[in-house]
Length: 250
Image 1 (spheres, rainbow, N blue to C red):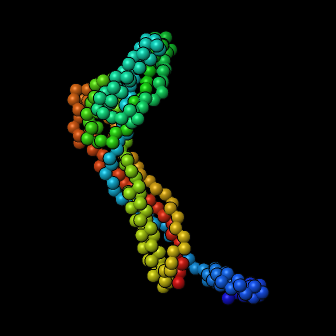
Image 2 (cartoon, rainbow, N blue to C red):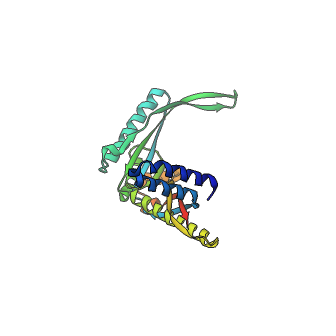
Image 3 (cartoon, rainbow, N blue to C red):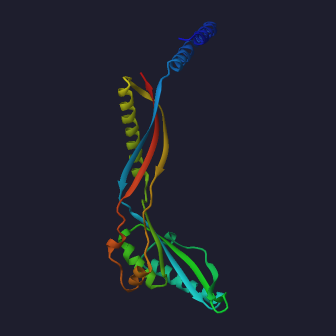
């Protein structure tokens, strides 16, 4: 033991001897100091990943209309958006799971090559209808109905989990086990012995949401009939977690 540490021990003992009732506190302090003096640790990070089948989809439809005047474009868009939302309601989707985003209105120009300048030809109104769907079997019918009733863009579909807790916890368990395995390998390689856990920290949690995008050709097919369910197969979600663990070395 180094000389400064011995001095600190002696000073603390002298103080506590003046107060015999504090003997237990003295023992606790001595244990803490001894542990600090002999502290040897190893810190490792661990990663864990689990696969989960999605049970939720967030679908974003675009409603785009063009007209000669801004007011006509707005009115046509409002009517088409309303029809699209009614189509969603007819599939028994709860009202709280449907929302209409802010309208964007902008002029539309075309290039006049004879005069080499842009010419105003009308106005475009653009709005999105967003639907959160908890029954994925309804997804193909939802797309077909909404497109037929007013939406002319399927902007994207994002898949997710209604409850991420189970998948997150399992990924964390795997991350911590991975950290212990790595620490065990490191200590065995260096002829050391792994001790108790000193500290654990969650570093990150990720759940990428796979997306499906549909091009114009696929959208035109959706006008005629519901696409096959396989067209919207989401596969599995990769849920990832990372943890930092510090172990004592015996």
